[in-house]
Image (cartoon, rainbow over all chains, first blue to last red; front, side, top):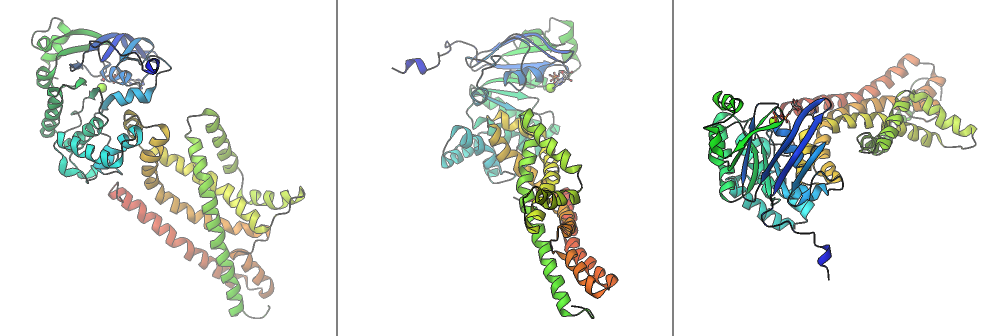
Length: 254
Length: 220
Ligand SMILES: Nc1ncnc2c1ncn2[C@@H]1O[C@H](COP(=O)(O)OP(=O)(O)O)[C@@H](O)[C@H]1O
Ligand SMILES: [Mg+2]
């Protein structure tokens, strides 16, 4: 009877995220110049490359923070490049965490986390609070439920921001240099949380400058250079790059 | 009246001072409500609404309050619409305050970092949810010191309502002076009353600004 109102399910082995020949310019500046990559369910893709090579823009296009000029982006069976896209439905499936944690300073950690599940997904308050406790335990911050963001260290704030995203139960998580704003001694605790997520089977696309972390977690590494995917492959390409650009990039450390 | 300054004169001034406070309150509530809509209009996603709100602000900021008072009292009367001095003064103050508070508050909304909008968008909140739950609570904190500071302007500007015959503090001083001819004493008293109304407000505003600077998200 109501079979026709159910959207066609994506084939079981379809990629969760796929970019196909994506082009994006800001004015005269070409930032993405035919970028393609795909992320399967449970896969971890690490985007690396120099500053300005288009990594953040690629991530932002996946979550429709930027609209693209050409090519296709598919996320969980939705065409993100379609002008009629239900953007809020897309964003329920995609969690995004930024470099500058962006917790809401006027809300407690618990309120930060319960806000979207309650307001967007209509999860009842009590249930949302239970959810908050669960995701906070997942990032090791269960005792910070009633703290305000300013009372946490940078590393704790970033873990709380990850928890806030997780509470929406996304199908894929995007991380954009989430440790770059942190003091070196605080990056480890955040990276550990991401590693635990990966081990749990979360599908992820992450941009990072932490090469040893990338090597350990990536199913696939995508090296971006001048708006193009210059080299891509398993984490092994970091130890034996085939292009001089990647060799130089990993050689310089960052 | 006539003769020397006596207790009745002072009571009359006191009555005028109460109306100055009353008109300030009307201006703050009326202008605040309307100004809130102006601020939202200035940051609206709709171009037409933004333009409308900006035009309103431009016109009112480019018109002396005195002229707005004249227009709403004598102008409307000439068109056959007789309104009381209180209504004319209250409406003029509301129209005037809305433009300025609207502009101050637009600045406060825009002062909330863009990343807060993006974080809220990333969590799939709707535009009104982002505004109500994330942006406005932060904007209100930013807005408190300048709003209290602007209340000083409101109190002082109510003196212009004397031109439409509204008997607030300044007008009651004029009336007493017309019979006593003691302008120096009478206007000194009036200046003192304005000062004692405004000084605590500007002190409070400065204190709020300082605390806002020292510990950013202070109140819970
Ligand atoms: N909104 C924008 N408007 C104009 N230029 C932008 C915008 N966002 C990014 N850019 C430019 O696009 C280029 C790629 O940026 P980005 O994707 O942030 O690179 P990465 O994350 O790899 O450092 C940079 O030159 C940057 O200045
Ligand atoms: Mg970047």
